[in-house]
Image (cartoon, rainbow, N blue to C red; front, side, top):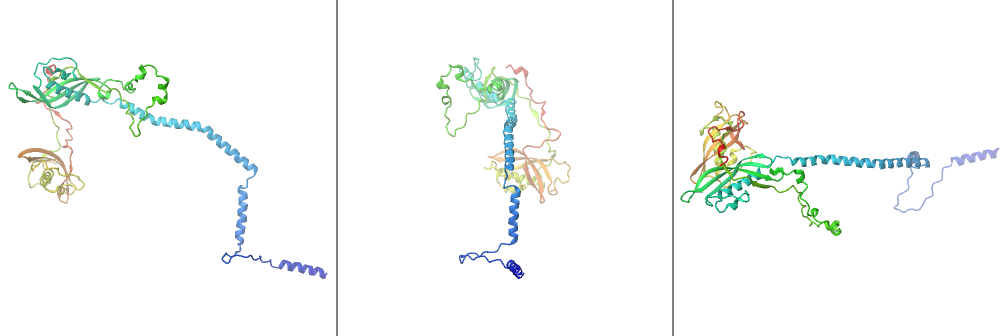
Length: 428
């Protein structure tokens, strides 16, 4: 019995005995002393291990087989969808290029230009007026039929040759009217000014429609026929890609696209002298009130000083312009002095503020006439200006590109007193 108690007491003492301390190990004197790991950290590590096992990082054979099937399905979907995506990309690219191609083709249907026929007619008239007996060949570049002239060569000359009208009579055919100031010899052999004369010329054009010709743009776009097309078949050596390709110098620009044959021009007859085109009067302007040139008028004072500085370089120009207006005096100054001769504005004639400076921000459009002097001669000029008020004075806010028209009149009016075209002179 006592032995049994002693054994029990021995077991109880063994259970209550503290665990042995860990055996000390030799460490460096600079090493960090070992620290006890908290129980919370141990529990967290155990939890991480459990989560890791639950999330499937330690895969089983069944799970790996499922993943393999999933990857296989995705790969087959990509293989099947590849051609469909390629077809879709080609369709999108084609639709984006279609408007560009249509626009390029539509450009060939633009209105024909009269620049070429007009320039040709001007050269032809100048050559015709200077030609004479023995120099008829000077007209061959313009008019191919042989002619016999009876006047002395050089008995007339033309200056200031310019086209005043050009009308397309039909496709590839133009009627051009040219004005030229003529100098001609009198009976004494002296050249005298004969004034302005007008000549009408028929000009036929061969070329693309842009030049007024009749060539089909679709055929012109094909380019010139290749010499090899009409010649013998090329040898195998000549037909090889290496033989056909010619090296292009590095950095050189590519050859320009072929746009059809060059335009050709020909006159269909000798020039016909005609009357001057009908003259016209301009429409009504917006400046209905004449303000005169009174020195007491603040508008007149501002405009006069501004134009003097602008045309003669005398005075400070910036003093008379609004902030933001970029304007500089003409250099070198073309005139020695200026004198204002007239001022018209767009205000009612009985306006109360005609001779006073209204509140800031008020605008007024004026048309002024000025006499500018240089070399002892006076020359008249006109300027359309927009004025505005600031700090109790008028300033030039802008140089108008042209005089303002009245809203009721926007086009020229035929002048009944002017000469009308004479149909009887068409065949002269």
